[in-house]
Image 1 (cartoon, one colour):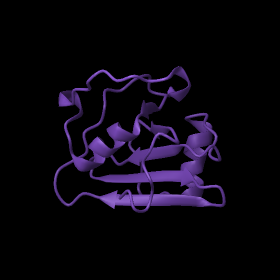
Image 2 (tube, helix red, strand yellow):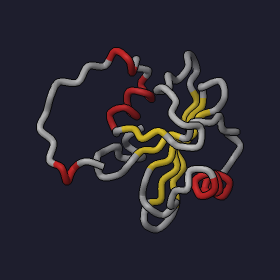
Image 3 (tube, helix red, strand yellow):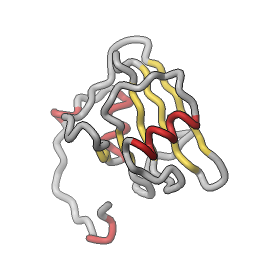
Image 4 (tube, one colour):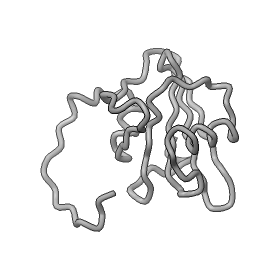
Length: 123
């Protein structure tokens, strides 16, 4: 997965909370970002969409000269989602949280040890 789209701290990761029809393509997903998330599709942020059964996920990101969609289908199991916030907002994830979500790691059991983080590094 990371060979196609580098997951790092250089961008934000925004999870759309409503189930998404996985037949949607570039333009329809951009419409959701603009109308419902009030986001900027050209920001370089990674927007995450998951279907109702939580077995399919699409990532959409602007990479400077075009959009990239990464589409993943689980053959077994389902994606665990973080707790929902307000229905019209997306959930901001870290690159680690997205990786855990994609790898099937239980988000509620992950324990972070304290680390120094400079204020400018915070999103």
